[in-house]
Length: 125
Image (tube, rainbow, N blue to C red; front, side, top):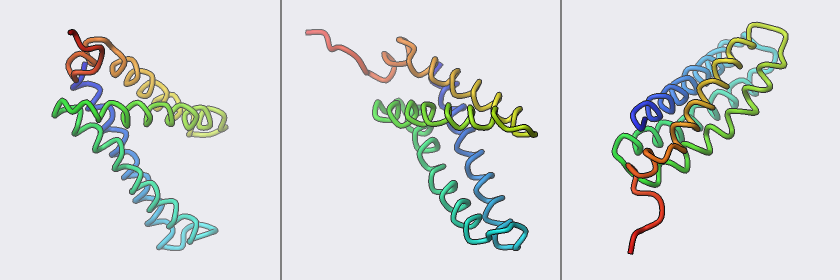
């Protein structure tokens, strides 16, 4: 469960890097209406990718701190998925995929076996 959650978090991080790089390149090439907005958005996505990527690394190394950022990433992904589902375009499949990944990852991260493996929970006296 923990490895699967880490893999899904890493996948989200990589998707943010790819999306950010695409936006940045489009802005630099002048292929969009507002190049500055595209460049800023691209850089923002690349920087934000650090959160799920670091969380994935922490999960693989059994670091208890990594569960929080991983959960927050999934919670933030749900409204993004919802917005993609509201689009009337090719974004709908992306919204479905993002929603499935976010819900699956949340379920894996909240699983009692995961919390136990990370050493999270009540301590026995």
